[in-house]
Every structure is written in C-alpha cells, then in structure tokens.
Amino acid sequence: FTYENAKTVKGESLGYITAIRYLAPSRESGQWNVCPNAGHCASVCLYTAGRGVFASTQAARIKKTVWRMTDKAGHFAAARAEIALAEKRASLAGMRLAVRVNGTSDLPGDAVTLAKALPSVQFYDYTKIISHARAFVEGRLPPNLHVTLSYDSATVPWNVCQPLLSHGVNVAVAFAVRKGEPLPEYWRGVPVIDGDEHDLRFLDRKGVVVGLRAKGAARGAAGRRFVQAVES
Image 1 (cartoon, rainbow, N blue to C red):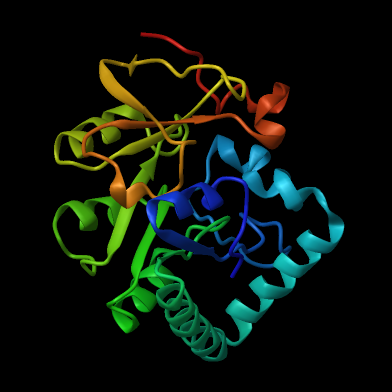
Image 2 (cartoon, rainbow, N blue to C red; image 1 turned 60 degrees about the vertical axis):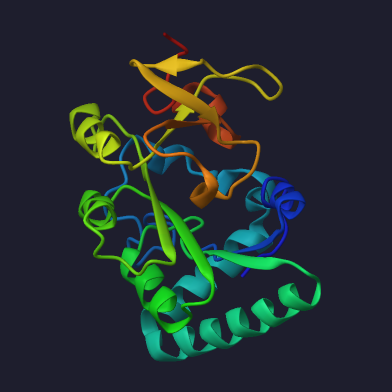
C-alpha cells in the first residue's frame, strides 16, 4: 500500500491516514485485466499521473499485479497484516485509517474480502462495476465499505447513474477543469461537490456528483471522450 500522495494527505486534516493499493490498471500487466469494465478511461488512467509516470513505479505495480493474480492467498495475507499494523500506527498517532483497495484497479471482490476481514477499518473505492454499486445501495456490502460509481459514457452511461444517484450513490465525473479553477455547481441537474479537496469519499453527502479535475494524460487530446466539458 501507498500512504502518501498529494490528494490523500489532505485527509489527514480530517483525522484519517489513507492507504491505497496501486496495481497495473486495465491490461497494463500484459496478462490480466484488473479493470473489467473500463471504458474511455483506459487510455488516460491515473496510472499516468504523479509517480505513475516513472518506469520503476510502473514495474513495481506490474509485479504487484502478478503477485495478486498468481498467489491470491499470499497477497491477501500480506495485505491483512499490513492494514492491521497501519491501523495500530494510525491509532497511536490519534488518527483513523482509511483504505482504498482499488487505486488503479477495479476488483470489487478484493475490497469486500478485506473489509470483511478487518471490520474496524474504513474501506472505500471508486468503481465502474455497476453490480457492485447496486450491492452498495441494497446493503449487501460490508458496512465499513463505501462505494462511489465512476461515470463513463462507454460503460457506465448516465441512464444507469441516475437511478443509483436517487438511492444515495454518488457518481464521480472527471471535468475539463484545471487545478485551481472552480468546478461547475451542477452537472445534468445534480449538485457537484469538489472531489479534489480530499479523497475520503465516505464523508461525502449522498446523491451528488463528485467532481474531479482531469489529471495526467486525461488533460490532453486522449482524454476528450472521457473528460466532460463544464456545463450547467
């Protein structure tokens, strides 16, 4: 797990230390697809943002993905032990631990498994697995696992997002907005909150669009099908 990046550090002011597992997204490992419902985001994943631009970081994430896929039991045993230790360290610092299992992957079962094993820890994820979001709405996920659905016109269309929004699921949308510039107040009639203020999605109010500013490759021409124009 990674414990520091520019966004998750913001959560420390709210009393949380955040741990995120980063795998090699989509088919970047060359063998497995860890983002089975990826749409337009596949070519502009956050894999290309921050430390993800470095070859050494990408190689480490591929190695971790291979480990997850070839030694699932060993991978989860190590993850459980690391999270338990991180929770103790967070407590000693007067903080709570939040864990995002799928930083650059979308394997809902992994988050469910770890959330069940560690019920005192707050887990959260973004997902494009529609059935996972529906399970969250229906109360079929562990109570310590929060899910935010990620909009993508190719695989998670708006007509799927709307009924889930009405039942309290939030929908993350990437906008063509630069750092420091304001996000729209509404998008398609739904209130927009600033999702870049922190990454603790389980603290967000319900039924809103979580606005995210385009980062990495998404800011360029390749992101035009994924990143949304600002509109009221």
